[in-house]
Length: 304
Image 1 (tube, rainbow, N blue to C red):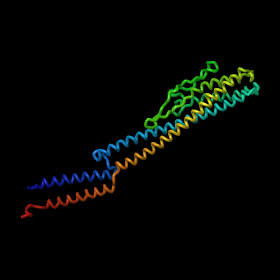
Image 2: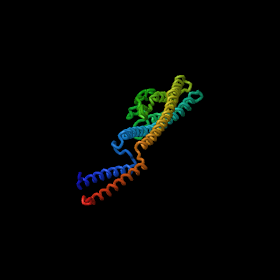
Image 3: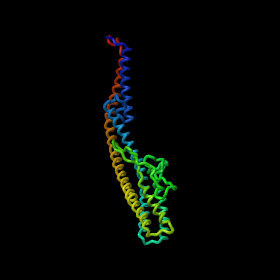
Image 4: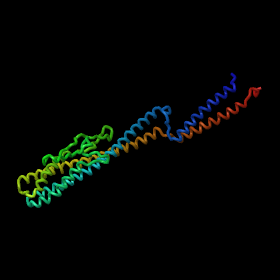
């Protein structure tokens, strides 16, 4: 069968185009360092890489949630620590006022600092974050948690205006952590403390009057039970939450390292093998060019 020059040229060009395409594809992989650049390169490996990429994205999002939540919990803990110090100071002052050894003038003098502590406690309970949201109002972050009505009778002027709903943040697969803390218990503390302070501010106060002593005792009990005990428990809870966040973040970091190693094993190019293939392609192309050149010079008359 006779092969025409046109058929020979088309066959050779087709072979050269295929070799050039494979060479270009291999050089592109060598430039990127990735063995799998499209699904057709290795369908199974491509699926595995997509799964690893999705898992890495989810873990990264968890880590961002943890970082944001950790900062918020640190702010909450700092404010609660401040409130705890204030409540403890007020508790110590009321204990001193209730020992029965002070005069009316002494109680009047002690009432001033207690009034300041009362105001400080209210302000701390109504603390805001950098965006202007109240920290301790539950999910009603645009409402001050401790409302004050000066027209109400003493003992009922303070009220909790937020709610006790939780703001849960996802920090892992099926794992959430509460981001908010409420101070509903402080309304009773503020009301009882104000009653005691008003009694102590009276110039004619009798330190041994049973009614006065009852007000002081009620204030001491509320400061201890609804103040010191509850605030201490909340601070301790936040410490445990921070430990949980640290543990989860470490687990995610370890998983991200494992994902990176798996991605390298599945998708990275073996450069030694790639160079060997590239040399084979270049040798084949060189040989094709030489054969094509020699066959172009051949003629049927050479066989006569």
